[in-house]
Image (cartoon, rainbow, N blue to C red):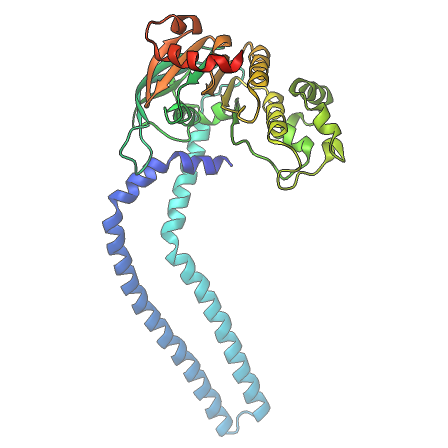
Amino acid sequence: MYRNYFFYNNKNYIYKKWDKGFDKLNQDNIKHSYQNAKKTNVINILKESRILLSLILVLILFINLYMTAELTISFLYAIITIAVLVDSSLGYISFIISNKVKIDEYNFFIDLEVERDLKSYDLSGVPIKIEFKNVYYKYPKSDEYALKDVSFKVEAQEKVVLVGNNGSGKSTIIRLLLGYDRPESGHVLINGKEIESCLASLRKNTTVMFQDYYKYELTLMDNIIASNFDAGNNSELINNTIKWSEIVNVIKNVPNGLNTDIINGGIFSGGEWQKIAMARAKFKKSSLIILDEPNAAIDANYELKMYNKFISLFENVTVVVVSHRLPICQICDKIIFMDNGEAIETGSHSDLINKEDGRYKKLYALQAELYK
């Protein structure tokens, strides 16, 4: 999986390299096709000449009574069989040669991955501090910036929520924070170091819960412990996780309990699946927790209850929450209000709710009635 991440992380580099070398690639393709056609013709002539000469030799031996009819047939069969085997081998060799460029590129990226792993700064057991410094980012093939000069800090063990309307840049920040994308300019720093220097360790020590969480075609138990299979035999941790996430009744309502096989999402509702996903997030011990709007299928009151559980559970852990619903803001240390790719307001709930003509204040007032 990490290799897939690595290729994805470097897509901007790949896009730029492709655009820069596109004309040269076309020229090389034409040249290669011409050379390949010449080689193919030469190989075909040699193949046909080889078989023809072999047949002529056998016929001469037969005509001059050096070989019987049975022996002649055996020789002809052997010649044809050997020719087929040789042609098959040449085909494999030709395939390898024609794909040499692809193999070289693959090895190039694999070498980069190994180099990154060796140099990765270890974050295990270390409180996570995050800083975005003048970050600009736009998605490939897009002319619009998804993030524009975004700067903010998340202190170690701080609980921060990114809020704003859809398309404001909240999830883009998470993608950069996880290394799925890289800034066009600016810096993403983890504990004062460029994220590239600790990306592998950052992911290892991060628990992420997205809105589109994965439903594994495994047992219900495996779907819970998937975040930390090494602790799969820790019955106390499993029981505590089940109680915390309130999925006791979910387990009781399926035929084989925790051993129930999940096929095509099983029979669970959206709300039940979100509780299972929350159990998965809780089961892994991490230094950084990221919650990217994971409560879309849960009603507003239960949402606030679950956020309170997460915040209290991860008291000594850095937490970043993405939400367009605002009650979570009251229990977080800091709010970063995003609009059109910019961080336009930063502060605590009390700071922003008292800001005259503040955007956060206006949005909060609109949503307040939903949570009475």
